[in-house]
Image (cartoon, rainbow, N blue to C red; front, top):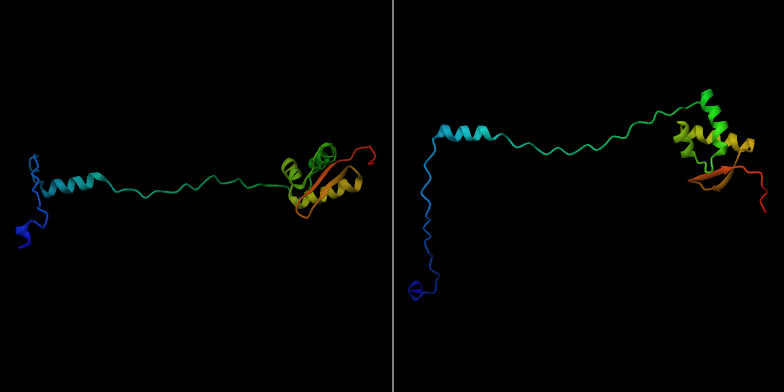
Length: 127
């Protein structure tokens, strides 16, 4: 009854103008599938590996001479600066700084538990 009264929407048949596809043989389908190849899984980039620092754990004579000659002339001296420039370990850099302080070659600027900063010792007297 409801259909006669027009309460439901009527479906329209859409006729396509394209001709029907010719059926493919099983051999042709198999050849298509084999030719496509399997999709490869995305590989995430590993990133750049940081090269391992091969720093000295004991002073060689040349490194010790460089420490005594050049380091007292630096404007800013920290443990990490000595590690980078002299290619020594941090524990050796701390010992080197202790030697330079004992000789009076450098003086502390800031002494913090995390970062110690030193500078060259100058002849001027602090006011």
